[in-house]
Length: 204
Image 1 (cartoon, rainbow, N blue to C red):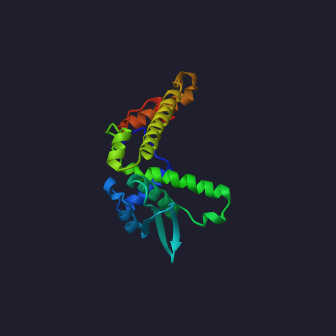
Image 2 (cartoon, helix red, strand yellow):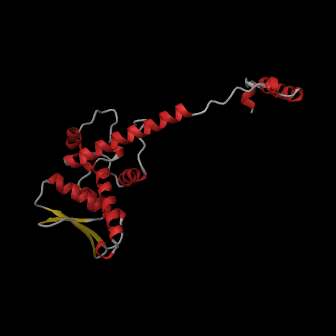
Image 3 (cartoon, rainbow, N blue to C red):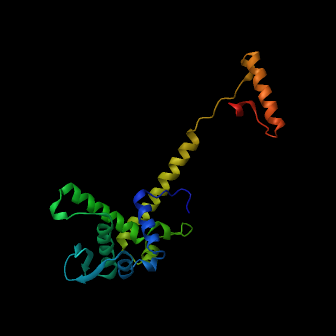
């Protein structure tokens, strides 16, 4: 795993959920396979995509007139609603509806190209992500920017922590009282007899 990549909670949740459902490979991220894994009914029709509960069973529909990769993106968006959200959007405050849409879009990006399926040793491009994961250019572009931004900010944070970490001042025992010096040297001698070679500052 890329040492400077730190996935956020939502991204980890998506991967954990997929792993528990047996979704391990890009070829597993198909609507029929995901529906079996999560107990969802699925279909296409001439109209806008949506998700609803019919007789206690979640049902997802996508627009069958559009390209497969676009249908796939719609499906993952609706899957995010099914797996992560509750309530009828027609009867909720606009702020909550907007939050659910934002979260479903985020889910779709992470579900289309999950963290646990990314090989960080490969030099991914938008084109290679589109091919490897069978996704739209929109999803591939957003995901590769997301990955690069996370690597940049995490490496920057780790670098700043390393550079800014204060170095403790050297411990000068000569400034301490004779009694303190005697006790510290006695303790050091005792530890060294046990095979632990330490400096005075290691005892503080």
